[in-house]
Image 1 (cartoon, rainbow, N blue to C red):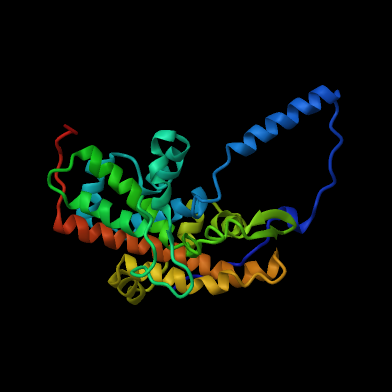
Image 2: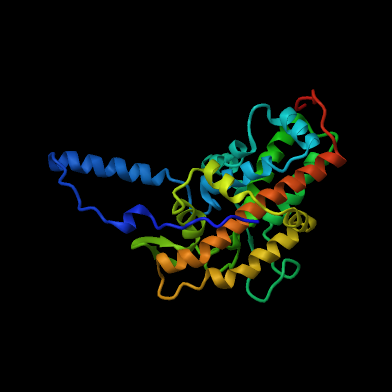
Length: 295
């Protein structure tokens, strides 16, 4: 069973510190502000589901549930690169214009009252389509080692994405990105709170959080791995109503206390299911080294 982990608010929310007096001329201060702004622009986009910590948690949990065949296949494809490390690659490359095409693969838009079958599909693809496509690459005997390794990196990430409820989102507000809120007094949006805010409030490294969460029962593992990608999307869709239960939008203790358990559950489910997907895929399409390089 999942362990109960005490939840704590962000440290700054517990005791705000007074602003320190910064010495220097106005020009020096202006330069410092410009440097800070540049750093802010380089921070991950709110569209990156779970943020780096969450995605690495999913990868680390999956590693604990791999069978020997999948472990061997991944060692062949990734070498020493862990699933936790591979998990953030699809977000890291999004800053490169050459990878702009992958943006719609991180989510799917399904409005209230719709299903995946009835919703208008993005011609550029979506997270459900992408998981199926990259699973097919792993099954393809003609695919090169490089193609299969890239497919693994995408799958680790996208299985995490689809378990974030706002990545099965509403079109009008871009999966909560347009829903302005405050998180312990700081301006934010609902999507960012779910991607990063509540996970960072745990005050744990990805490895610590993964170790605390990764205690499903044998029955839970069997049940969670029994479904497929459409089932995962339906679950996220069904959880949206509680995600939007934001009152006046000033989110802090109460919202975190009520919603963090959902975040924890979705992270461990994603990791267990990712392992199940890789176990099944490599059992049906074994990988042996060396594979032919890309032609």
